[in-house]
Image 1 (tube, rainbow, N blue to C red):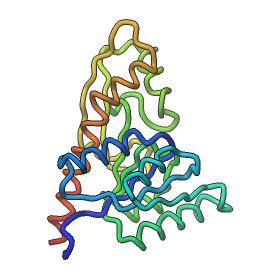
Image 2 (cartoon, one colour):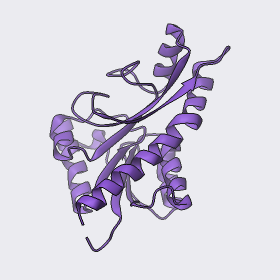
Image 3 (cartoon, rainbow, N blue to C red):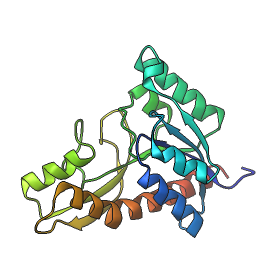
Image 4 (cartoon, helix red, strand yellow):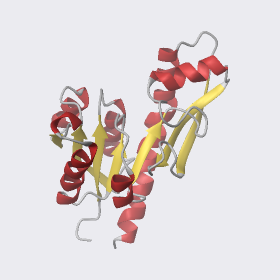
Length: 205
């Protein structure tokens, strides 16, 4: 491989705080085996796109609304990723469930960060604040975040890294979400990106 860095695409739908964590980790040298080559959003209004543009990273908007069905939408995603020879796909708050056609095509090359300690509070319907609402409703004392490979089962792929975060007295879902991001997601997502990027570059030597 002439270029020793894995090419990373980050798929986003919203504010892009996890994308920012990856950008910052790349700048600080935590991520040295990979480089963000592309940011794709299904939402043209996602602030994450602005974050990417500030760093001169190529951005694309591929919205489900522009396609007749999910299959054609996924075809467009696949075409964009393969055209740019992307090695690793990071789902960072990407609010689309991907089918087996997509996940099978990039087996062990797609990772996702989920705001709980899987297998707790995960699977279909568990995303964003809903995860933290469920954790507080259950009364758990410890929550956290998980980075895992993506397969056709929502949150069902093999776990790469986990980090625990304490639930504190008086937590609201919003307060807990912020703590889980700061103390877990923004640490283990960049670390996982580096780990998998290093493995990919090793394989391709």
